[in-house]
Length: 430
Image (cartoon, rainbow, N blue to C red; front, side):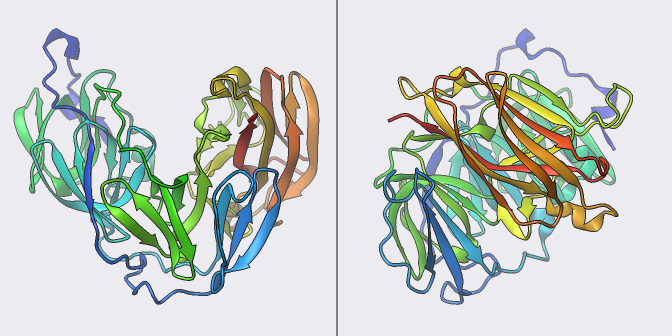
C-alpha cells in the first residue's frame, strides 16, 4: 500500500540549501548490434507494410521488403508507420524492466546497468547502452514492481526529489535530496540520513529539474521523433530507410538501426506540426457518467487509453493520442499552439473505441465531435467498439482561438464507452 515513510511528512526543502547534483544529461550512447526486442537477430524480421503520410494527408503504402526511397520533408513524408507482425513481448525479468524519462520528452525502456556519482548507465531493449547524467532525468520507473492503483498515484515532490521504496508488500514515499548513483542503487538524503536504496527496491525516482539545458546536441539529417513498440520515444536525425529498417543518427553515437517490427511511428520534428496531446487542455469535463459529482469519474490519459493500457483500435497500436470515457469534453487555447508566426491552421487525426472493451460485456458506442470557437465543425455519427480506425477529416482552425473535443454516449448506454482520440496533429502555417 502506498504511504509516506512511517507516517513521515517531509519538511519544506526550502528550509535547507539544495545539494542536488545537476539534473540528467545524455553523455553518450555506445553502439552495439540492434536485436529485435524478443532477442532475435536483426535479420529475423517479419513481413509488413509501411504507411507514408504527407503534410496534406496523402497516404502511400509500401512493402517493407522493397520500401524504395523514403525522404522526410513536408512535401515527402511527415509520418512513417509500420503495420505488420510485432516481436513477442519480453518475459522473465519484468521486475528489472523499467523506463527512464528525460526533460525533453525522450524516454527509453530498458534496465539499469549500473551507475557512478551523477551518471546512470541504462541498457535499452534495442541494445545500446545510454550514459545519463543527473541533469535531465525527470523520472525512472519500474512499473512491474508496483500495483496498478499505487502506480496511478505516483507523483513528484513539490520541492526536492522523491523515491518510492518497494519493500515487502509496501510502497513507501521518501522525500529528500538525490546524492548519487552506484552499481548497487540510489543514494538519497532524507530524515533517515544519507542512505542507499538497492535498485531492486526502487519503484520510482523523481528528480527535481534545476536547469533548462538541452538534453541532446543538434541532430544531422531531418529531425525526427521516433516511437518504438516497447514504449521508447527518442529524438534523432533521419539517415536512411531500407528493407533492414529505419536508420537514424543519434547524437554522440552515430548511426542506430531500428527494425521496422520495433517501430510504431516516426514523425518529422521540424516545427511544421504540433501534437495536441502534448498541450495541456485549458478545461476538462470528463467521465461523469451520471451527470453529477456522485458517480464514477474517468480522467483522460495522454498517450494511453482511459484504463491505462496502450492505445489500440481494431488491433492497431498507436503511440500518441488521448484516451477518454464518454461523456467527455476537453478544451484548448489555440494561442498556446503557435510557434512564433507559425500558427495552427488545420487539425488532423484519427479516432475509435479502444480495444480494451473486448474484455467487457458491452463494446461501447459513442459520437465524436470537434467544436471550433463555440461552433460544432464536425461529428462522427455513432462509432462502436470493434470497428476499424477512422480518419478525422482535415478541420480548418486557421484564425481560431478555441478548440473543444467532445465525446458523447450514444443512445445505447454509457457502458464501456472508452474512446480514443488518436495522433491529433495541429498543422502549422508555413
